[in-house]
Length: 179
Image (cartoon, rainbow, N blue to C red; front, side):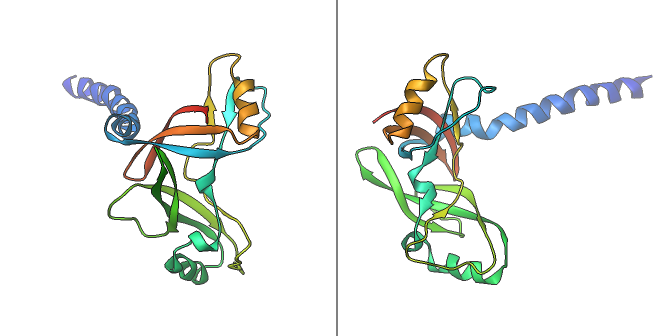
């Protein structure tokens, strides 16, 4: 009888622990991370089912060959296709606005950086003009009812900036506001 009660308690406690563990990293980042401001670029979202939201793309997620670490270019030549974990090393530009310093596949030991994914395909031509993409941040920000259209218009014009809390490569989107 005691054995069944212990199994019941374990079955009850394990899901609760798992749910709490899933919230640990975002809560820890919000409480101890550094707040930075990033520039967004225009995107045109359309989805009726999700309610009011702003679809975001960040300026640091688009980059050229000049922003790539030479070791990352060498890493591309070792594989035909796939997803590679990359890190965006950030630098302060003006005021509290941050920009991209470099994209690398090695985790930086210090400074501000974001962890993300970059997809690449065979015959990866490293071209000076070509733009490369990586996903570092969430691409949707849900807003209060009837405020989404105003922010969407500003987003299409490239007039939004985002406040992001960053800690050890993990980011939590805190706010989106006009420039």
